[in-house]
Length: 634
Image (cartoon, rainbow, N blue to C red; front, side):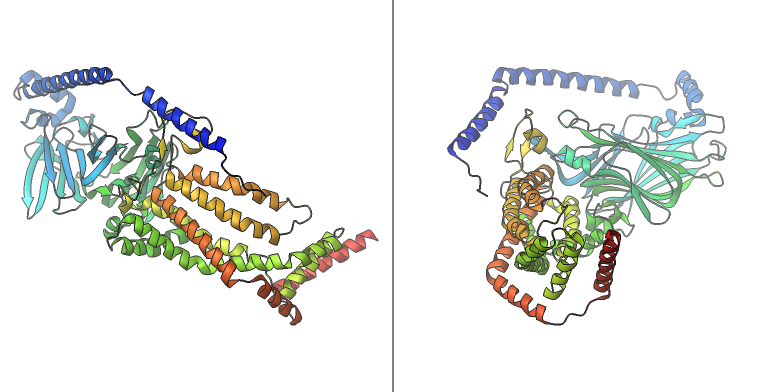
């Protein structure tokens, strides 16, 4: 088959297309006058927003705490908890606690975290970089639904807590109390440890509320979070943004990340709102008896839905025992990083999508330690991926060798198989018997070529899970890629281009393109031998024609699947395919010689063969089938 080459017309066409794309981007760019007008408008809107905020704050602050009319209204709405509305803390104020890894703001209203910043990590945003925030601008709330003794249903998110800050050693402690009297309260207790610590202690307890709350009903805790986009590709980030939970003493499950979904479970010990490379987790020492979970996908159109990825809701019942609620819990706000989560020894590593069974085992005990050791040398993550790829390919080279030897043996036997096909073309059963006899005499296993490929599947799938889970690749650059945890863009465009946009989206990833080109040459190099070694069986499709088509389809499929994936994964497959091509060339030209294989096969034919139980059983079954066929003809 003649290879296709770029001719002069193709080059001109490529240049023209590039020129059209550049002209479209230039023509759509705003003029200087439009930019100035936009800046003026934004400034006016900003001033309006600041004015409204200031006015609202003043209105809240100027409500007198001893206003009798206000107290009556509060009593009607809040019952005993109206006491909390009369305290000086009944204001829209915040208390901040902070260490080297976390900065948290807790609001008086609701008593929950309204701002959670992960220090030292930047959100990927065009034109600027901002600190990653898991919570901000009212995207989250924590609400306790309380049934009171006087038949009210109250929501803690709407009531004011009284803050009290203190230090216990080096720990920062913040208690938030929703008061029904001087010594009657519902308390949230936050304890933040020093250093780069992402886990904080969190407690919920009540005191003196036995006659205030309805103790026969549980208090329902509702935790809600709209997850912000923090990464370069919102579609890729959203694919790995999911709700994960542990239940019944160590089992774990998750909600489908691809669609809106709901679930419930018993004896839940933690709930995680995972955002691909960051996560928010609520853990409890006392399992929640029956929990309900909900996940809503907020990305229908990547071009327009560019702020949020998912909306997560967890409804968790808190038991009231002896008129008291008392739960010791923890919050985690931080990186979705295997080493950090695993060190807590709370089964949090299950939040990472490392794969199940043998796939997860390979990632946990082989790939993560090996890659961690290589990258820890300090040679950069791009070079670390290349070295890691070389080690994996060397480890898999015996499998590659066996696969090629099997193909070479089948290729040598092809003339004899062709003779059998011609000789017994009218008797498929006899042809199959004689073919199996030939394989047995020659010492060739026709399935040997498939086994190496099957052996590589666990490694292939484990790697497919490994790279998206590697937090360390986040915003690490290599060559032209500015973030190995996301795609690298050789060419981007805004407009929808038929067919091309369907395959690649609005960009072309260079590493994905190189990986696709490498797989094309690898398949072109190996397909000829496979066609020569695998004769077409009667009644079966012509595999030669199928393989010719696959030479061109497979690279397009690789580009389609990997164009939006992490460039670190595409880099791995590009280097892996290059190394595999090199190994195959060395084996073909310097190690495996067809004349030696032929001599070995002839030698095997002269040796007496002992049938295995399987081979004998197969032969007997085929002989019986042949005898039955002859009997039917008579």
